[in-house]
Length: 189
Image (cartoon, rainbow, N blue to C red):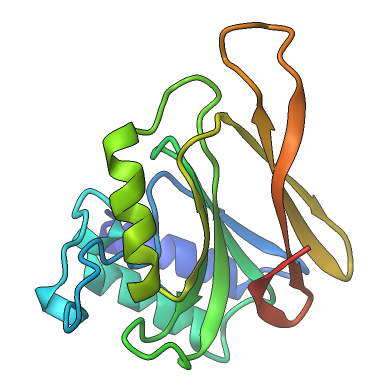
């Protein structure tokens, strides 16, 4: 996912940031997602999409550990796409422990026109109970993510269109989440 030089560039840039909110924009789901919702499926026995950061666990752990360190910038957040569905994921130091430290929140935006495969929606929903760090998933609606940041709150609205078949389709807010300054973790807004 990243090489040593790119990892160092990212960590150095984040460590020297003076921004109140620090956005990491990247292409695939960063959070762990175990797609096997059966008892005892945590850890290596689970089913993971290795085309996401689940295929690069050591690199994800390096960045997550940095975000948990004293050198980390304030209020990191991750913006992601490329899966044609909407997600909100809290980034945990240890995904096997729901009480583990949350170091960031990931907002995954859907596509405007490409569908998430309908046969995968029910299995993803079924897997949510094994993934308590996933705060939201929707694979039905197309749309976009709107983020509004101020000194106190990062608010993310998942905007959806009623149909992709008409340019005059109405737009509505499917769900909204907020992350408060200094308190990592998504909450319904």
